Every structure is written in C-alpha cells, then in structure tokens.
Length: 101
Image (cartoon, rainbow, N blue to C red; front, side, top):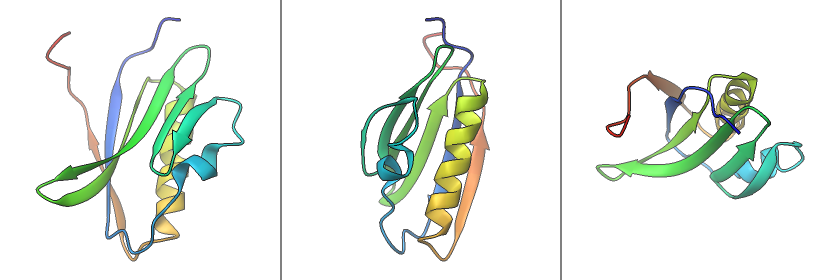
C-alpha cells in the first residue's frame, strides 16, 4: 500500500472531560485498533492515527496521516467529539517534512 503525503494537525483543548476517540471511530470500516485517544485507521490508500501527547505538561491530540479523505474524516471526528467534552477546542494546522525524508 502506497501512503499519500503526510499531514499533521495538533488539536488543543482544556480536556474538561475525557473523550474516547476510539469509541467514536470503532464502527468505521477503516478502524484497525484503538483505545481512548490512540486510534489507528487504514484504507486502501492511506493510514491515519490519533494520539494524546504532551508539550510542557499540556496535553493535546495529534491527527497524522495522508492527503486523502480518511485524514479529513478523522480530523473532523476528533474536533467534533472533543468539542462535546471541553469548554474550548482549537486546531493548529502544521505542515513540514520529516527529518528522514
């Protein structure tokens, strides 16, 4: 499977309540595995993952993947689900090449 280009979006939140992203996406045909904020999705043309990370003690969710519709579908689901459990959610869209490219 050839993966399309890489994208990464950081989603910041106050994390007022926990959000189970895996439960939100478990019924998708592209769902491979996941628990809480960590999800792996795969289609024929791309892979997408979500993860909970920390920067100077502040948690945030990262959505990583290709340039196809699955990436945008996952990103929308993450933002929508997290908005239901937080006072404030905002995405930071970042584009860069990895050091090993």
